[in-house]
Image (cartoon, rainbow, N blue to C red):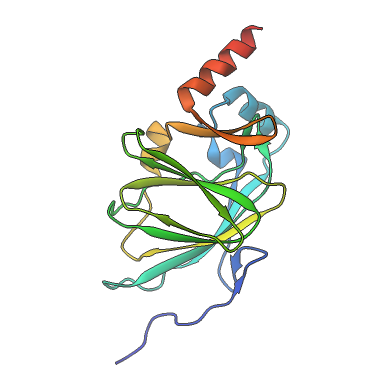
Length: 199
């Protein structure tokens, strides 16, 4: 049997990177349309285009039964009252599940069914494991004041579907209320923003 797959890598859990792998950075401008508070987004973008999160991964295996994995780091911060977050995605192969393992920081994972009716907000922090079922949109959010680092492990054939999120986004948001994160329906938060503008 010939072993052609990448069998060994090193992970830096503090930096949230897989050593020797290229790091993909997502800046604020890459997340246009994802934050509910568009005015806060535009204001923040005028002040700069900071890196929101970075990922590095191993996707060299492609056979049936193979796995891919990617490390991530989300910086702390907020756009308006919404915490820094990833774009979020479905898997292109919808039944694919995924496991996330937290290394450092304080975060949550927003899990949502395709119709937006079923939603879970699950803690992702140091020494925690989050199971993301198939057919579920998932977004990682940093609710702390230090970088959130983690790794995700998923089937090689899973793929990433960012397009669906770009079109309809998540039906829920995670916003700061009295210093703590709160899950809200996106439409309710948008109404709150509109009311505050009128005051």
